[in-house]
Amino acid sequence: MKITGETVMFDIMFEIFHLEGLTEIKKNFPNTTIITRADFLVPLLTQFPEYVENILKKLDSFGLNEFSISFNTYKKENFIEALEVLGYDLNLRDIYTLDEFLQAILYLPSSLISTFDFDVRIDA
Image (cartoon, rainbow, N blue to C red; front, side):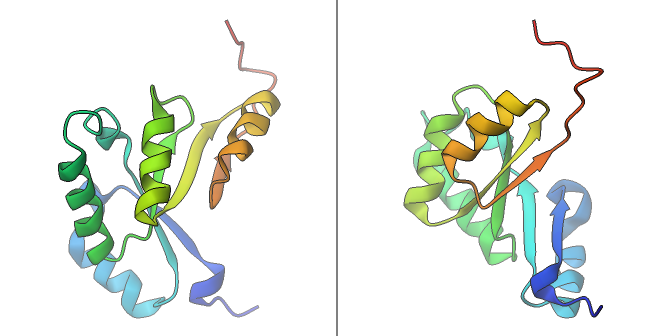
């Protein structure tokens, strides 16, 4: 099997990977999906929506083309709607139960990251 940019998805932490790493990924896999965590933007959205939009545009200009938030992020619905309005793809992660999975797919994300730990996770 040949690995191409269409078959590879990178989930990176931008603050660790930096622009040089992104440049290298884009050079080797020009059509790949690169996801980064955007949870830090969720609480800023209500007070500073223009600021959040500018950050998303800047990250997009670096080649980050999908934004990830935890399914458990407080007030995630506003951020999910903002991503949709701005035309960005959404990744939902930290999905541990079947119930969370079924709820998450209702948001119509581009991708999901799920770990079903039925034996170790206890919902309160």
